[in-house]
Amino acid sequence: MRKFFVLLMILSMAFVAFSANQLEIFSWWTGGGEEEGLLALFDVFHKYYPDVEIINATVAGGAGTNAKAVLKTRMLGGNPPDSFQVHGGMELIDTYVVTGMMEPITDLLEEWGIIDKFPEDILKICSYKGEVYSIPVNVHRGNVVFYNKAILEEVGIEKVPSTWPEFIEVLKKIKKAGYIPLALGDKNKWTATHLFEDILLSTLGPYNYNGLWNGRTSFEHQGVKEALEIFKELMNYVNPNHASLTWQDATLLVFEGKAAFNVMGDWAEGYLKTLGWTPGKEFGWMVVPGTKGSFMVVTDTFGLPKNAPHRENAIKWLKIISSVEGQDTFNPIKGSIPARIDADRSLYDDYLIWSMDDFATNALCPSIIHGSAAPEAFVTALNDTINMFITRKDVKKALKEIIYAAEDYLE
Image (tube, rainbow, N blue to C red; front, top):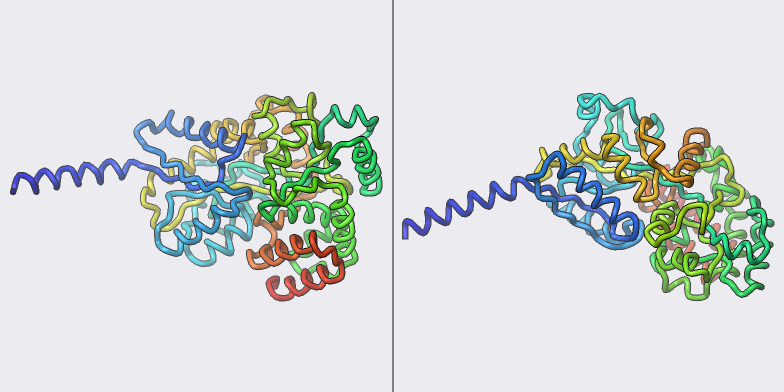
């Protein structure tokens, strides 16, 4: 019996030693392009730390709709992963930093000598009271329209439209030709709100749009009503089955030659590449009408939860994703640009170079639906309003609900 207990103790110690050399990474990267990019990052990590077992804790659901609920439950229950994907901005700060669930990592960035390798504005949305709490692994652009070049050529569209009246006239021609003008997949509610926030940026302009989040601009601004009216008009040109499709399904309609346009963040570019298309050959892109000179920022970040089970391995992960090698491995696959300013531009395709150039020169505007601009309560309220608006089509009612939500949830 004594030998049995000794053996049991040895096995237990071995298990503890084994489990101590793990790293649990939590994300929602399960779709085309994003999953491949994450696995490529794991490969870079294993090159330097081959003995660490990575637990890939992914939860499917576009924009993290399902993952965020699972993560919050785990964090509140005292069961954090070692590091997790979170959008920089209010999603990070309001939910996890202010509530005391994260460790500051400013000292790590300074120790590694890279704190000046990230744009100040990007680090700012990852910071609270002078401390950095997460590392941006990428920068996505939200205000992009991808299109099927063959369909536009067949319909006779020689120049992509830059204003909403021009865009709607093009949508009419495409509909008349028998194609879906604008692909939408809002089975997960966020995609409709993604479209709305891009329209809102166009009607307000970057100065007034950014002013919504510091009180400079009122939600009673005429541009908010105008955005709702444009959104309502666009719903006349989307696929009838939009409510049953995901964002990938909507992008696939463009790939399959069934739809001409798709307003989506540039993770769609990564997805189209995994399907076999080449940027600039089979598909083209443009900014959302009326948003030239503006860059809707979406950034995925990773931080260090307090009481991370494998803290040292989590720090190793943060070092890898903050490196030039890590960012230049991940982003060309994901369809995003690196957050670091010293990345190797030669590794990026024509679309991503275009995005890099605009990121460096355009007005940067934080996304609402992707967690950067506003508190979660406001995002949820706006999401519900926009998705009800698709059915009700009542501009006056939707506008009131948005104004009330701003009064309730925005300081």
